[in-house]
Image (cartoon, rainbow, N blue to C red; front, side, top):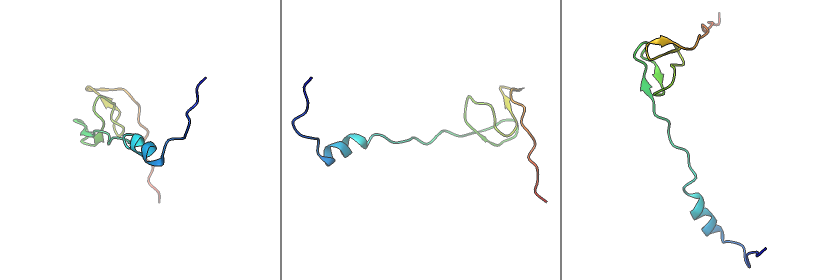
Amino acid sequence: MPLPKRRHSNQRTRLRRTHYKLSVPTVSECPRCHAAAQPHHACPSCGYYNGRLVIAVKEKQKAD
């Protein structure tokens, strides 16, 4: 199997890796509780999606 004669330079490697980045997730408002939620996902605060309950969300306990 052929092998490269010399290794790639650091600049060449870094130029290739400039496109490896994360994108910011889209956030919309839940129509039921108006909390921030991703579109086409169940709301993490109320558990509703498309007008019906999909996830049973536990109540947050307050620290005394």
